[in-house]
Amino acid sequence: MNFFLETLQVLLLSIWYNVESFVHLFVPRRKKSIAGEVVLITGSGSGIGRLMAQEFAALGTVLVLWDINQDGMKETARLAKLSGASRVHHYLCDCSDKNEVYRVSDQVKREVGDVSILVNNAGIVTGKKFMDAPDSLIEKTMEVNTMAHFWTYKAFLPAMIANNHGHLVSISSSAGLIGVNGLADYCASKFAAVGFAESVGLELLATGKDGIKTTIVCPYFINTGMFDGCQTKWPTLLPILNPEYVAKKIINAVLTDQVFLLLPKSIYLITALKNILPMKQGILLGQYLGAFSLMDTFKGRSKKQE
Image 1 (cartoon, rainbow, N blue to C red):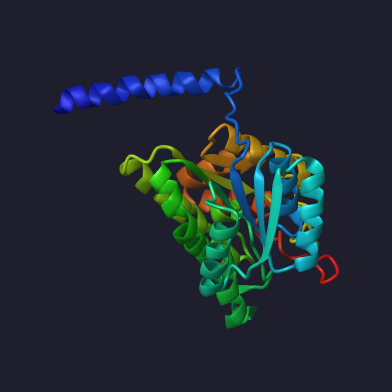
Image 2: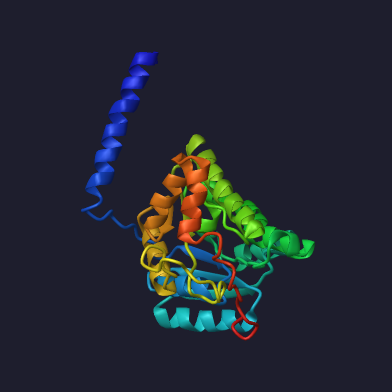
C-alpha cells in the first residue's frame, strides 16, 4: 500500500473510531456473557479481590481463589457461593514465588480446568521512603506487584492462545501512571505492571489472537485498609474510592472489553496533563493535587485487618 492510501485509511478510521467513542458516551457498550468461564483471582482473601469474586460469582462463573490468607480465602469462598458461583475452588499460593505459582497452577489445571479469565490483583505496599525501605521489602514489592504477573501469564496464557479466547485483567494503580512522593518502589512495580500488560496485549493482537482481551485498571487510593492513614487534599476531585464501586466498575470493564479503566475519571485528565505540560508546571500541578504529601500520614493495613 502506498503512502497516500495508507494515510487516507488511517485518517478515515480515526474519524470512525472517534465517532464510535462519542456515541458510546450516551449508548452503553454491549456486555458479553461470562457464565461458565473459569475466573482466577489472586489476592482474593480480602478487599477488592473478595468483592470482585462476589461480582464474578453473581454472573455464573467458576471461581478459583488464590491468596496467602487461608481464613480470608475461605470467607471469600463462602460469600461467593452465596452470590451464585457455580463452583468455588481456593488454593494457598504465594504469588511472589515463581515455583509455587507454577506448582499451584498445574494443580488448578488438573482439578478445575483451563483458566479463561485471569485477574492479577495481589499487591503490597511498604509505605516507606526509598532510602528507608529495606532491600528485602523492595524485592518483595516487585515480586508480588510485578513478577507474579509474568508467572501467572506464563502458566495460563498458553491455553488462552490455543483457544484464542480469554481475558487478562491487571489491577495496577494510578501510581502506575504518575510518580508519587514516598511510593518509589510501589510506583516502579505498578508502572511495570501497566507496561507488561499493555505490551503482551499488543503481542497477542500482532499474532492474530484478538479473542484474548486485556483490561488494565488504574485506580486512585481505595478504602480497603491498604493505604490507611493517607489523606487526599481535594476529596471532590480525587476521592478515596469506595471498594464496592471499584469492584463493580472493574467487572463492567471486563464485560465490555474496556482496555484501560482509570478511577476516578479525573485521573484521565491528570495523566494527559502530566504528559503534555512543561516539567515545572507538572510539578506545580503535583504539589497542588497533594502528590507530595499523600503518604505523610500513611499507616497501612494492620495485622488484624489482614
